[in-house]
Length: 205
Ligand code: HEM
Figure 1: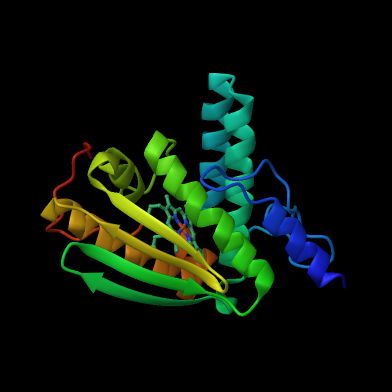
Figure 2: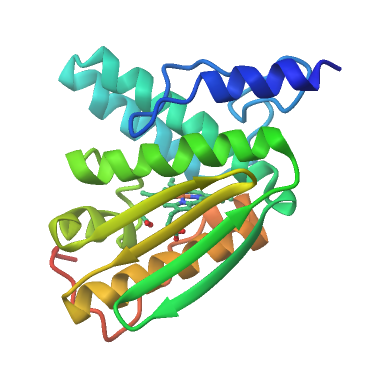
């Protein structure tokens, strides 16, 4: 298989801080996760997706719809290949430092796409996973979150910090959620993410 070409495709499809427009589709290498039959049976992710697509359709914003679809394909593929991802998470007094890597260059390409894209979505408040309170909370707190992303040859180095101790709890909880995604893949993505009791929510519910 033309692994090298596929990797190139993924990397050139990367758009720093924005997510690509659906480029980088695997050809013979890793396939994106939205093909029929690829989704786990009876899962709430499907509900989430149709809800988000309906919501985005209502805005008439085709660029955002395409971006969301691309982002979704990327994180589904990461979830599907979670066993090829390694992660070191360090708690800092004011947040986290994480190093997320893979020996597979195609996965590295997806990490290089996903993390800047999510950083950008946080900055512009382009939310997702609305049914899982930890996610809307971090979007609601985005102005208090500082995220520094460094793309390294085998993955992504991130420092995510806040001056607000309550937001530090949230950032650390998110770091732990990504660990669970890496450990358990889709099985974890179907579940509500743990949010510590001592975190004070800013959204209702
Ligand atoms: C195995 C799967 C995944 C991997 C390896 C991954 C990796 C990462 C990494 C490295 C970060 C930077 C923050 C940190 O290091 O803790 C991040 C942030 C983020 N990811 Fe993912 N991710 C995965 C799945 C998902 C899924 C399924 C979603 C949503 C449906 C998602 C949404 C986000 C969002 C919104 C952020 C920015 C907010 C935050 O820092 O938590 N990720 N991801």
